[in-house]
Image (cartoon, rainbow, N blue to C red):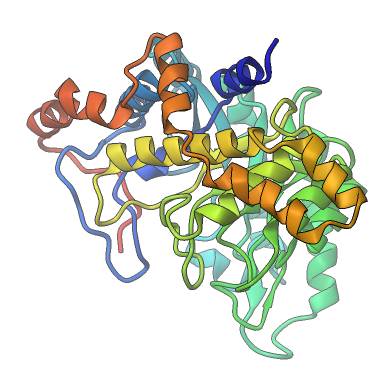
Length: 386
């Protein structure tokens, strides 16, 4: 197989998971702008996700968020997805919106609140069983706002106890993916603030526990690709939440703020074997002012472009320059790949997959946007309010 053919094969087999909540009304903390045609049910979210997969060919799974995507029959929801050429992906828990969680969930000082939170996480594993989902994704808003508010070490003990109970409930082919976030909504201490804390808990739990890297959850200037490389080296990178940030956790379209950073991340994924392994590539974005489905299509394409450039890095030339201490030569190898216009290559890939070479134009011509605006009238649109 030629190098170009190998790159094409890798791109054809890539999979990007889209999040159900990105199809609903979501956005900033201060205002969520409603749009016409927004799904009212989890089933309608899947209908929209099917269009993203139809035109990109690489978005076959959809992550659910509980209780935002709560239904009476999860097996039926999985069948609804299958009927549209999709599968249900990661099950995302929610332990941050109930009033009981004002002082935390699994780290709360009150044992009754901790019990409620853990029971919700166990319910999510039940949903995994019903849907065939393999990943339980956990993000906790737990933390404190003031020095002395709670015992920092005791909160870590409570977190470890809760994670251990849920980990013990996982099936043989299921995983726990633990996400970290530097700050917000807690401002003094966050109980899972960084990759080191998440890694320490996952290491103690066992092989079914992995770390999730949300690209928006870092301090300015953080070298995210170093974190990715380290976690891959340790076999503990479970997946990504792809998005972009300018200031904090902005949840903007992946690749919009810093496409070079996305390329660097994807190079380390390729270098570490993550592209052909079990790393989950999921979008985690909020489309507040832009149209949702086209934004998700564009985001999938951004990931594809960064991946294609990463695959085009001449690794032999790079290794030779590194061995020789050729600083500028090594950097030039990476920059040459990043500067390559991969859009013609991706057009070829899509045509070989039987897809329209321009997914954005194909979606615009499909009439789906007009159809959902006309048909989704009445009822309550999905979203998280604000």
